[in-house]
Image (cartoon, rainbow, N blue to C red; front, top):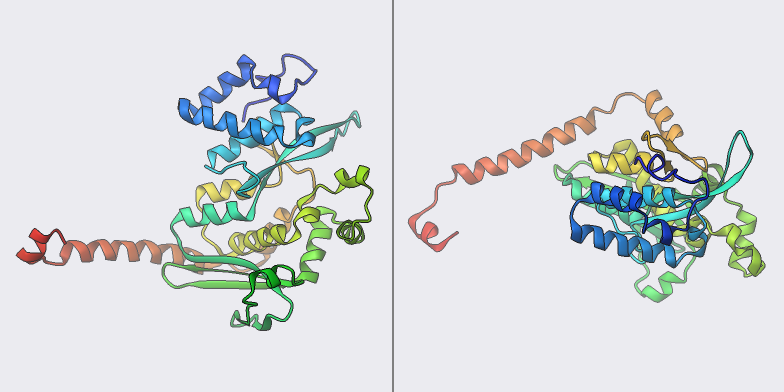
Length: 321
């Protein structure tokens, strides 16, 4: 998004509500979205999201708009209730001046990943869920088979401790992939890539963090660990073995980053992007992904051929079947 060039008239960044009324912002939104109804909906949604988050109001207005326009281009909602993507305030320290400024980071929610995967049309089924204490009987990593006894009472299940996370997808052609992580493995992942402090997390859950210090733990790894864990499972599963649409690729590449005008993504915190790429370079090529995509297309063509070749009786024709 070429936001910074158009909005660098002054060094002092205006508040977002004020900046949204500037000609530069209006022109940028108009040129990007074009449709008047879409512009009105987008403006109302993003203004509401920022107004309800005091820390986000302190961020540079340009980074908020960049992240919001990225979400809009993916046809996702910024509403926290929907959980498709989030605008997350972060402190960024400039390398040269050591000056700290607040920027808005684009974070895709696990429900956003599900939305984009479903839209691609490749997946017959895709699911992710936390596994609660007492539910898991076994998970066979070789055959990728799992057996669980789900707690039937939703309220009881919600209040039961989580012990791990399960994610799986199945293509239209029947190819299936599944994975399971223990909670301990997920915590280790969060400590490595998101600087999660497990001790502080325990204190926060116990209500032992001073009210004035709560802002330090606004990361979703502190606020909603299970949701972030579900997102991580989908990222790992789809990025390694899934077919990714153009939209899903863009979302994956820019997730947890600040998008600059040249298209480059700056990550405020460590991510698993590089690690996944390195692992895939070491692994042998995965022909099954290309094969699966070809099989999906073949399956769709065969369905069309069947419809064209199948003769219809006069009774079926006039009945409209």
